[in-house]
Image (cartoon, rainbow over all chains, first blue to last red; front, side):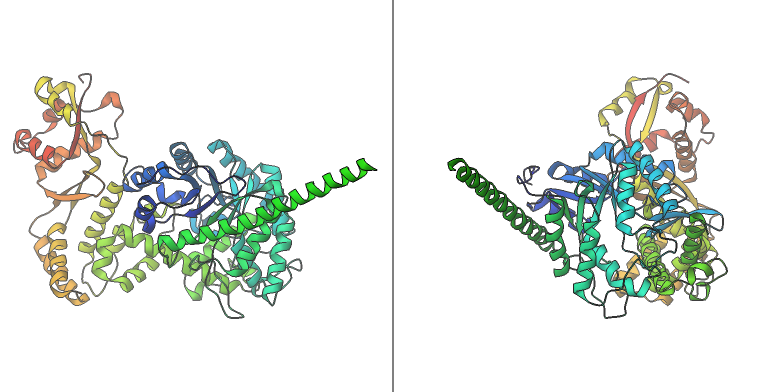
Length: 327
Length: 284
């Protein structure tokens, strides 16, 4: 066992990893230089038992971030009250530093029966979706008693009827509901890669190479004000051949493209809490932590450069003052 | 098309699961979109994989007996006939046992015994997820100092009793032992075991099981009909308001058979950590 490491390094973002069952023992027994642990909320919806005992132990050593995957905040059929109450109980019990879910729908009627997709399904980006989602986010925030983060999706079907770009839609959602964004950088890359296979809108251009994909992702980020970003997710997925759909399976190390985008995102948004996600084909705990270390190195690089630039600016400004004083 | 209709259509198409049902009158509008079929297949594969993973955890014994491929086919049929009303994968499968009962699985003549095993699997899984119950073993001393009408029994987390048609504990043990001897047991061998058990199961009308959780792992045990009736009283008591909770004295009064002995049962229940504490209550 090790002592609680809950103090982040000054000036750097909080950097954490997603914790899956496979790594519970390692997380408890091997000290890791990380600032928080993210867990999927639904894995702790049981009223009692071993999962809670484990999470209670984890919470003694790390800050907790609760990442929900089932609320379906874009559903026209709202989540049952019991579901929100279960999430609320977890929030009360574990006092997470962050709470998040996705810009998707999960609840709908099938043959007249309220059915849960068990997945994150895409929504069209229009006023009807926006109104629905603002209401659902406000309801969740009211029930949980705090602001939530909403994550952009990787989508494999494009529903017709979008009148906004995704980033515009999400910005409006934040402005109208008071939530913040969790930007998943790999989802941006996945969507840009799949765009030629899916696009049914004139507003979404097709991309043919990595450079264009990256340019699209940077444009996406440029549309989001700094003040609305609450967290960044980093993940890797299986690479595919041209013409095949890329799936965000969280089964690989973070790709070079995503690392590059992360560097850019930190410059844009400042020291935003960052999480490494890895859900399939799980690596060793050490490998996972090494990914978090890499994120930390990039953050140090970005912010030390920023500090140096600021210091240089200050120096030259003082120098100018001195010169003008002399004159 | 409204947002609600759009969402209903997409989810219906995903749950249809079969290729032949991908484009129906319900989703014809969505299907005109570029990449719709490829995207739909991704969501369908994801639904099936997640449901399979969740149910294989909940119904671990059934999964190990019928094998991964048969289990996957069963899960697919289940999703097509029983929609996913649970948002928590851990709660999926409430009707899986009754569904199994009416399926033809791995050439088994009768799936009833497999359905009983599934019922036990689900009960154990639910017990493992049940709310924790505090232990206070010192409170057991109240049994010797207080009137039985002033005492109530607090059972271990997730405690429940079940009547089943087959002696599934013996069946499970036999199949596990065969597994150990033969490393991987063929479907045919499991079928023989189950057929044998099915015949043996006809010796009694019902078999009774107790499920409880002394710590984190669920335990199960076959019990007598008398113990079952006694524990069923306490099981129904769990849903009663506090002011209507059963006292030990009243429970004994309600037990009509003289074949149940509290004197024999109590030390056994304490030893197997079925009782977590004794508390006092206002006489009823």
